[in-house]
Length: 326
Image (cartoon, rainbow, N blue to C red; front, side):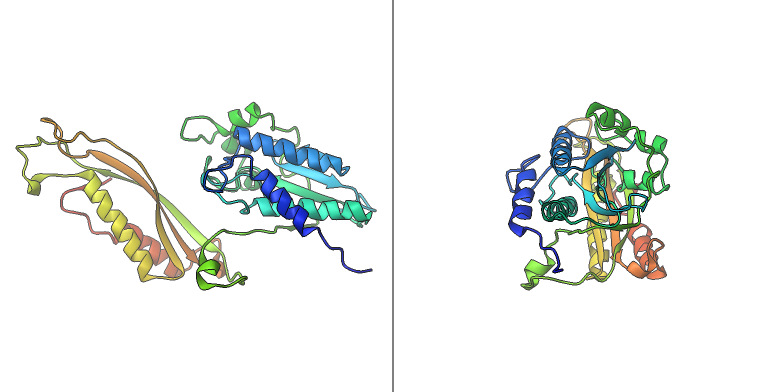
């Protein structure tokens, strides 16, 4: 028997169809986990799987499992999948390709009438991106026993809404206890949408490792002062201090290029009143930073070199004379 062939055009059309759920003006997707757009794409996914005769089950974390029976249903299923949630400025393929590629494989099996020995399942994990609720890979972490359901439910977004509340709101808190089902194997087709291949004019590359990550939240505190009466040498401007920290973060990462990345993810908040008789300096500012290095052989524990880069990222930044760190 020849190898089965998927319908590439249908897969592409499916990717474009689901990209409408949370579409952005620049052609990407903003489909944060447990949002209304996430609910819509989940409903779409569920209906398409059920149209193939699959049974769709949802666990207590909202992860979805679409099962196609095999010749021997006593065997653990072969799982394929990824996630349908995206970053706030996500692309059309990161995570989504893993779920919809699995759906296309399931469609091909269905159309050809091919019967597998083991059951086949498509998995859609909840909050893999972690852009709305930290940490990332939250539901799969509960599935694997790394996190407890209570820990996951208590995570809050920037608006103070908890993971548990939003899971209930969109109607995807299922009855199945996370982690009770066992897989015979798990395959994930995945793409991280970076610019390297395009920049080098290449069509395909080989993954060499995974990036270890360290995240920090930094608060820089300055001092309020009279605008006219306080000379520059006595000012303590928090935003200026933060700017110097951010500049040094960038410099440290460049010193360890191309494998290391040091990024300031967000300028979260600051307070300022310029040209005021009472306040002349930004008093506090906060930002988050992530440090990453491609060092797959040491994952999840970073090697000494990775750790030294991280330490430099914090303690190696000289304190500006007109601000202080907290």
